[in-house]
Image (tube, rainbow, N blue to C red):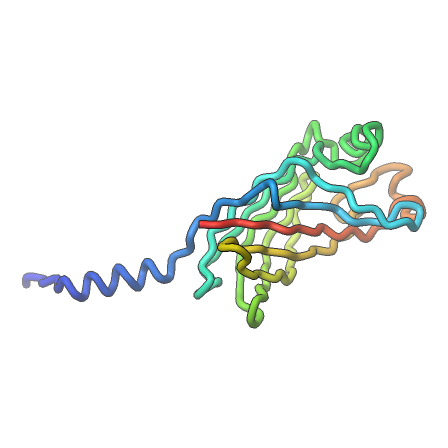
Length: 185
């Protein structure tokens, strides 16, 4: 039996597949940031990571086909003091020599209503991987997508702050990873 392929059917199938695919966005590092917010001696601190790579494969119409991946250079955390920056890269904190990257890889991205997405995935810091979930907002500004969100974590769950630094009186266990990412096609 001979199979006949109808050109219109093939075109419609191709359009359906293209519509369900996500688009790899170009992240603008100059207008994007990733930071860690925590309390040190009960004083709020926001420290920014200087080096990170973010890959977003995004479909606004069907976000469930979207994907995201983030690599953060753990030695690039800037807490505002050169000596402290060296300290957080040491073994007791990020152990950047052995674990140079913290990573996040999405497993699902789902619509949570207009301008909101629920994201689940795997977060790996200092060799420890956990399942995480957070909500982010997405809007369009000057032709670019702007993704903003916050992911609360417990630093001790990732062995960040070993030895004497396990004491949460000096540095709180609660840390919020904040991000603002701008990206375009």
